[in-house]
Length: 620
Image (tube, rainbow, N blue to C red; front, side, top):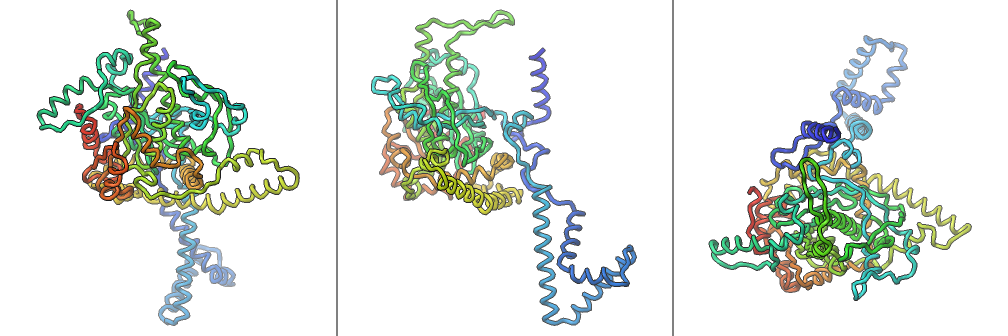
């Protein structure tokens, strides 16, 4: 039967791929794929050396070959080579500056040709693997047990703000024409994300029943002796309102795999129904679209309102490309929308009779009560992902959505004007570039063709002399040394290098086998550098102030005392306390830039202290 076939296929997969002993949700990179350049065989290195010598000494070699005494035989070749080395040794004995200069030139030229030949041969025949996420999915080679891959249409934040909800809570559709914005609408994109669902006992209960069992209350900081704290914590555990979902945004150079060790215990200890983290466009295993391609579409894109319906309409790109932070948040909102869809199935009770199952809808008023139940979510953002977390919280708080932020946790937040120096951006808008590329500039005739030719020339020049050299250099830097990630994490990211494990390194190394990995990073960096100040989310400090003022939302900033990348400890921390009094700062002693990876238990324990919770340890 089909069920037996699926079971046997799953068993084969488990046999073929076993998770790592020190991290049960992470797989090793398959032996058929290569994260680094493979070494060139010895015999090929020998041929490269001989060929390099022959190229540099081609004039001398030509004289020998064209000599009337030379014969194309093994004995003659051996005699010729012997005589050449004898002559070279005699010249070295008779030392002179001219001979020394010739020798240095000969050795230098031979080395340069050998190195270039080695790099070229490695790049063609022994380069690192670059495979698509579709290939990994079809061959059951995704990096973790929690990995998922699906097409996602990012929700447009600009459209949601422009065509949002009026004061009465009704969907506002009063703007001009929807068709005017269709040309800048993003198409669906393949997104890799990890998702963990809570324990079955929690997952199967409808929200109404959960809220009956778990009374909602605001977490309180408990300043009491240890025994009293444990007693109060046990009481709180039974009363603590559970979350619908936890959403997590990763930082620069990382991927959703960075959240892999902490995601399951975080979901369980915060009593959430699920946890989701996706790879931002340009990172991990999410598809990397062509940054110069203008896409369009007519997709249903509204966030669900409290009645479960969508605010329809087409998309509007707020940043001009799919590598922007707005698109990153739009992907997260779309995945959260899918989680709302899965929750609606909880409005049905499941009855079992023998081997047959049937779903019976509960009473209409009970279904309405279930839909209106609180869908509280926690949003986490690390480093670069802190801004995405704030934008997601702001967007959801301003919409009449089923999902409402209850907790925002920023880990080592890289926020301009907050924890980092403010960067002045240009005031130009990307809309003109979009208009010209989409053929709406109004130019025609010779002038239009001239502009098109110049644009094509600039594009080719940029690709040949900027993009390709940068991508090759980045590939050599990262994949040319098998210890690159280990050394980088140990020297710059981890507070205690002794805590760095092979699994920690593997989580960063996995995405480097993704197709167009280098191009995606370049496109993302170019998008951030060319972004203008016209975005409504440009001011990071204002974003944080807006979120800390939201009623019923707790904002926590957690940072390591040994963070070398985003240094908050000291002066910055004191300024944050003054400027953002409603934000709780948590200092993690001895931790670096990625405390949730460096020590999961310490990170969760400190978070629970702030939230006034005492839950089971991650090992329990």
